[in-house]
Amino acid sequence: MTKILFVCHGNICRSPAAEIVFRALAEKSGLADDFTVASAATTSEEIGNPVYPPMRRVLEELGYDCSEKTAVRVRRADYQLYDLIIGMDEENSWDLKRIFHGDPDGKLHNFSEYIGHPDQDIPDPWYTRDFSGCLSVITECCEALFEELTGVVFLDFSYCGDISALYEEMRHKMGWEDWYGENLDALHDILTGLPHKGNRFVITMPYDDAPAEVRLYASKIAAVIHGKFEEARE
Image (cartoon, rainbow, N blue to C red):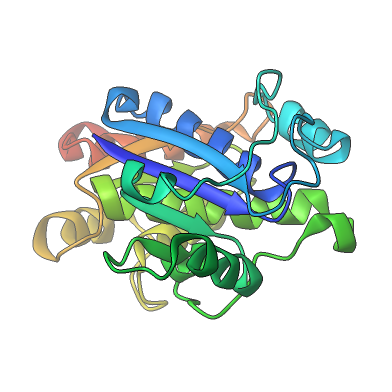
């Protein structure tokens, strides 16, 4: 089991969002028992408080349950309890190194490193007021971290309004070059003839109000991904 602690300044916006989203990804992929996930603050300012209402609203709008989360503070003993301790910004990193007297086992990480930007902060929505944008970045980081740990790739076709958008989602999540073909034969070739990031895929299909051709094509993509290429071509 991998034990992960997400950390931010007050544990009422960014780190609880990361905890809740990551846990939901683990449940969605059937791997909930493989992880222990928690979050905490580097300060005592918000201890005992629930998730900040604007952040809670954007989480709940997407179906996440925040009702049981209240802010707690990082303890020095947490360094031995967790395998990964992930801060949201540079200030968190400095505070964690101070609390833990360094990082002898290399457990401390900046969340943005998992999307290829190790020196980039997750902006604090307490100041920016962009709670939706913050949650979007946190979700991307959670998916990238989950993929690194498990090999599972999440493909979200729910908001795709045309076929090109389906391929753009795959290109983004799977690291494809722009010149990869946007057709089922090319997709099959990529999945069977070249290395790809995921050992397994979790696909969210387009909403029911998406164009019929988009929903049909998304089902064909899913068939190819799940090894049913001939069925997809019918």
